[in-house]
Length: 474
Image (cartoon, one colour):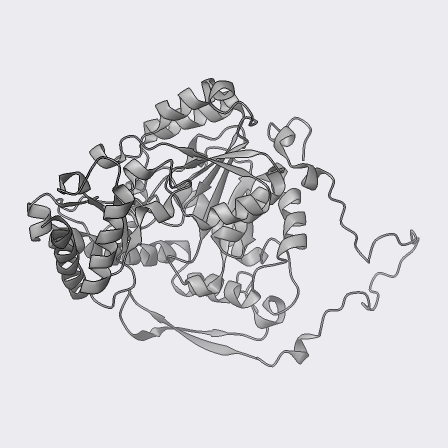
């Protein structure tokens, strides 16, 4: 890491003091060493010990369609292609940061689609998105350090943060219920400018953890202007922006707009919400991505877009915490991209996945809006900008039982009603950083549109949700 890199003072003591021991170090300097020595150092099994010599993979042409013979490919024992990952190398102990072939593919994708404004970035592969987030906390968070988090979030992140001694600080989403917007920059600016009086016993934040495009649970995206103002605050107050982006490619139009399911690659890319990396000139944005939503979560494979000065720190973190990602997963993803025609074919596959989610989202929103509960004003769906979820506000202030403070009690009754009628969803309060902080804004549920076999099931789900809501009010 270069001495003038602005994030250097933010690195954790644990990481600064890290000095891994390697058994191949501390050996005598050898003059006139043999040019081709017999390798007896590493405990690496010869690939002849691997039980698999090859495999055939059949790909879908599009979601929910059967395998296509023209899209089958062979995973080879030893490949003759420079861009292909083979069994000999992927089943072996390998680079902590991922196979070079896959990293090269990802780099081309990031250049084409994400378009960071700086050229001073590189790729580190991870064991899924959460592994990348955990490594960021390992590298930057000391016990007692604070991290800013939108008040509703992907709560497993909190477990990782607390494990490293970090303190989550929720940012209030004032416009959530009324305007269905993620717009908190004024709230954040006031918090940072008055930190000593608002949080007198806590250090100023080292990091903002954000899900800016397809926020989980809300499905909303921050505007470009909002991101620019957030980035300005990050530079002014010197904190890192940890941009978690599992849903950004599942990008939606509004439910009442005519959808375009025939986007060209350029049209698809231009429709995406911009990344914080498109404005990052100081290397303070770390972008977390995953193949879970566009390939398969069981692969446990993702990657980070980080400033090159951070590579060594993340490599050491990987050596200590998780080692390299699964070689088998890297074979599947890398060679699938090749079979689909390279990055352009991979973008077409992602667009097809996006199209299926857009159909589901629009279908579910329209089904909800036909129900009695919607027409009576008892529930209001939030039309998401991206993602796998539709959040639904339960307008409990219209209930005769609402007394101004009994949010949780009424949401409990709603949950019991829906479970008895036959539909389950996540209570908004269970996705809050601090439930007591967010009580007055937690009268919503998160519904996943991803798991059902067919959109017709969403019709039934909408009706059952309506029945559960009407039972609460009537």
